[in-house]
Length: 491
Image (cartoon, rainbow, N blue to C red; front, top):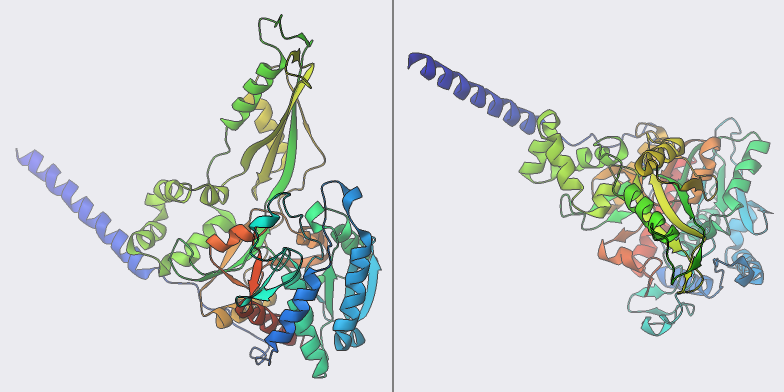
């Protein structure tokens, strides 16, 4: 009995010690220190004529610079009209910068700095927009290409993605140029014409920089924003993307004899074989891992979150499986922790009573940092085993981007400015979509992805959707951000 008592006391003591360790580590969990600027304070706010800026964004929306799936449907003259309008709308900025047009309609502006020894900064915003889904025009509160200014917002396709960024960037540059600002560090504005088509504008801009021996201190493009109701803390958070997932689409092809559907083979033909292969791949997911930018997001916000979250993050050695389970409870959360597998398209027979001779599936992968397209292909081959199907990439995949620094001067300027203006904590994040900026990785030390706008989770649905609009508050916020960013980072 005494031995049992001693065992009980020992176990009890161990539990008390464990609880003490967990409690102390939780109490010591602190938010990361605010970004420190080593080149002087942030540039002062500027005066923005919001109504005039709204009218100019309205005009920009009316140019139908739509990138269609079928490029034959594009209207190149609309890009020409937009370019001519930019010159007339922003005369001071165009007088201060030189402009080159490459790869058809991609724009590169150079605002030459006074110190050529300093690496330039690159600010990006694309000109093209996605189409409005046929039949949904009636669901828009205001016609999608009229640029209506109403209800405290500018309405239309591209109001946020990405003419909102393009126009507010030029608004900021125009304000500075009008005031006679001269950058010490060269500023490049790169605006591709085909981002929505994953086109050649941004790669051509990278080649343009390489040919001139330029390597940027940092690149800033779209990708993340200020999320007003993030689910971790319930409040606002500034998310700045420090990496992007890779992108690739895998073709899965099942060959078969075909023939008449009245006499199907024992194995039911290519359609069934293809189905088995797709299910095998989908049911063989990549493991969820708490690492990289996805983990950094939670670690940054945990000190501002509820006690249970602080405890779990402060004691990852004990609670990491639980953290992963909770984050992965939603598709968005799970996407931060692994490479995703999404079967998206199927093709079989051209007619209902014909057995397919080749059935094909397309599986879209978003490849997490740390994985590669070679690893993805090997993973898929292991999943299908000895099923007689062919696996190949639709076209050469984009690999995940490198992870940019959260200690650089560029990060410090971006984080300090966005944090001050939004009065919210700043966190690195992982962009699960694809942006033009990935093409400039080879000509930049760091690449960041942040659109200076305050958006709720629900409002994100209007991007590429119905009733896209930019509030006047967000318009002013973005103009202020870009003007102050240039004035701070390029001085």
